[in-house]
Length: 98
Image 1 (cartoon, one colour):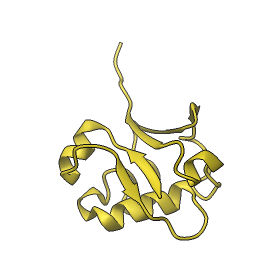
Image 2: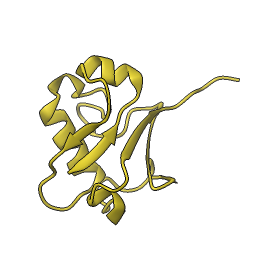
Image 3: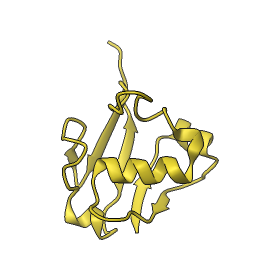
């Protein structure tokens, strides 16, 4: 079971009040986690990744085990602590401005 922490605006859109627990088949990667998330919550399709390119949307970042994984390849394995459900996979809304 993979635990995903969503930013408030995506929790509201998905109508969830806390962390999301997902079953992920096969290797646990950013792509497999996001595929499972969008399959379970179709209203999130296109909000985290572009519909066509499947690239991460600007102003969203991915973190796990105190590491910024935002620029890692989408098919790179996530840390074992995330794959085992010990640590969550964070989707964080970035803050911009000056």
